Length: 282
Ligand SMILES: Nc1ncnc2c1ncn2[C@@H]1O[C@H](COP(=O)(O)OP(=O)(O)OP(=O)(O)O)[C@@H](O)[C@H]1O
Image 1 (tube, rainbow, N blue to C red):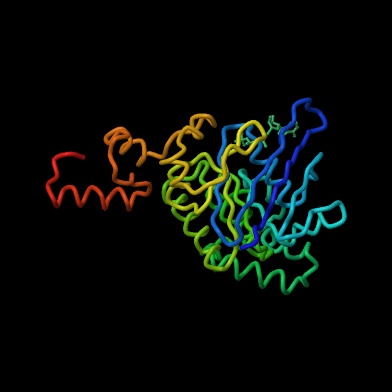
Image 2 (image 1 turned 135 degrees about the horizontal axis):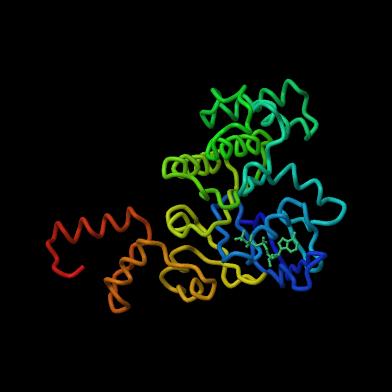
């Protein structure tokens, strides 16, 4: 299937910075799949995201969206197709009520006020936040603001939804809620891209992982390939194995022929089998 994004030797310099933030990025993001972009602080993840929604134009190289090169002329149109939920929801709040705030995006796309509010109401219902409609978004908790920001993006009905560190500062219930929302977006046919340091989320959720460091792509692969076959890429990017892999690689070492569990469910299945069969070696 055609990729949703192709980055071809993309370089980007911030005006005030001598070092390039993107240093020749090369990768593809599959359409309709769940992709995680992982990398240490300063690796270039946010800068990449700003190229995906057309906010930034690369200094050199090419970005392709759904088979079309992104150019000066069509870059601003990306905002109709690609919605971004920023790390800090305060960056996205502009109105004095949640309902107005969520309706702002669709209204900016040129939809009538009635349609913008219809979409806002629908998004709030989907995310179970209709009871917040008349609240001032500035006065909500962090987790509630995050859901409002996601609803705002959903109301614009983009084909691609990008979430920058979606789990940051959320409690376990908030994290579960956001993961449910990410799955809901997939069910609605969106391509979902997440930039994160949360490796268990990558293990549980992603179909595809892009590993970045110092403005370069170190690898573009599946979570299992990354964690089991090329874990040295994580070390190179100053990242850790997810907890399940840390546990099992410590117990099993490299000798064992059996595939390592990657998700919690796989780990539970292995443990349950070992306990049922009373195998004495973990
Ligand atoms: N507005 C800016 N002006 C100058 N340099 C910037 C600016 N924003 C980011 N950079 C630099 O670009 C590089 C990539 O930053 P970016 O924010 O894309 O990384 P990141 O992977 O998203 O990091 P984090 O995980 O900390 O959010 C860093 O060296 C950073 O210092």
